[in-house]
Length: 231
Ligand SMILES: NC(=O)c1ccc[n+]([C@@H]2O[C@H](COP(=O)([O-])OP(=O)(O)OC[C@H]3O[C@@H](n4cnc5c(N)ncnc54)[C@H](OP(=O)(O)O)[C@@H]3O)[C@@H](O)[C@H]2O)c1
Image 1 (cartoon, protein in one colour):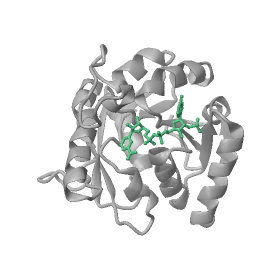
Image 2 (tube, rainbow, N blue to C red; image 1 turned 135 degrees about the vertical axis):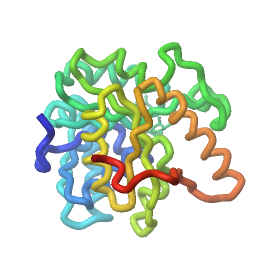
Image 3 (tube, rainbow, N blue to C red; image 1 turned 60 degrees about the horizontal axis):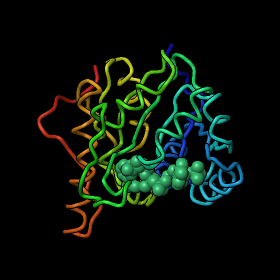
Image 4 (cartoon, helix red, strand yellow; image 1 turned 45 degrees about the vertical axis):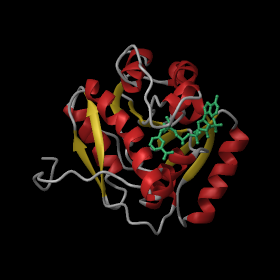
């Protein structure tokens, strides 16, 4: 069953750069947000920080498992080196039908390498690793790799960019798009099956390289698509 607008969205890693940006943008759009952290006090501080930036948001603080338990959708935004331990820890709280939106990028920086290089992941991508780790019936969509945390957190910054979605079910991607497109300026594009995530994840490394040269927070915009892209 598709989630109701009143269902909270759990953001795991919301005390960090990308998770915080996504959480405040969604909260500003009226989405109830359950902030998850390994440390509930950090979750509470994150809620207070969010409340200082947006008015009227519905945000609550939890440990990671608590945030996941009450949510129809879970956004996972942690460094790749911590993705598997985080999934191991939250898996008992995940249940069939929940949608996990994975933003992890296996940058070589995760093991002290360059941020413009990728690690090889046996499963093909961080998202496919996530699919392998979640309980059966949890839906996995890969997204948000080309959206900069700095742009999200600067609430005056117009986004006007695409979010590249990969997943094995069109319905799951539509569900993710229905949520993420509540953020003004974001258009979600169906990029194909979850195995395409190895390409979309690597675009983060490309954008880091571009950003370093132009001193910007570049995003991605595909051209030539029909409007609207979701029918
Ligand atoms: N930053 C960007 O612009 C951007 C853009 C696209 C994709 N991404 C990807 O999105 C993911 C999150 O990026 P980020 O820059 O937001 O990461 P980050 O700020 O370094 O960390 C995000 C959160 O991960 C949690 N975490 C869980 N286990 C951890 C551990 N053992 N050590 C440290 N933190 C841990 C922390 O939350 P708690 O301490 O509260 O548990 C932390 O606040 C990464 O995979 C990244 O590659 C980032």
